[in-house]
Amino acid sequence: MGSFARDVAARLRERLATDRPVLDWATEHHVAGTPVDVAGSGDDLLVAVELEWRRADPSDNAAKLFRHLSEGAIDADRVVVVHLFTRYYDLASGGVSAKRKNAEFVGNVAANTLDGLSYHPVTVDLDPPKRGGERPDGWQAAVDEVAVVAGELTNEAN
Image (cartoon, rainbow, N blue to C red; front, side, top):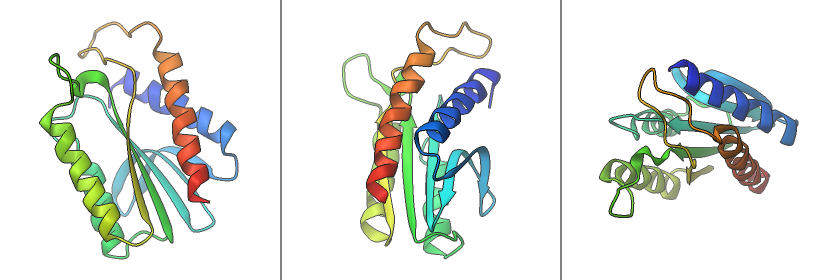
């Protein structure tokens, strides 16, 4: 993860910790050996926020979480996965890439199959720069907006 992605995750964690202080929030939190970009835990609830920046396979880490949950390796009765996708996965012609569609498909199948799992794909209004590029204007506001959405999804889990 590059420095900009780390800053985005840190800002997201800070906002979620302020908005949902009942959970213990951390960045780069490991769940059964799988790193989660931002995670909140408490009272048999795990909220895993995965930020898909420019990944070739955006379903990979989320799928690992689903596998860990199905194997009983996650110590929580309820797991909320908030899957954040940057505008990198948008198509110029409209809609989203097959990579994002596949990731959402995997998440929705897992949520419909595994007890206690909810899955929420969310768009971050951010077009991440290539390595070494300039941070886009308004990135903080985009992160703050998605933190509100993620916080609301977390509230629904209670």
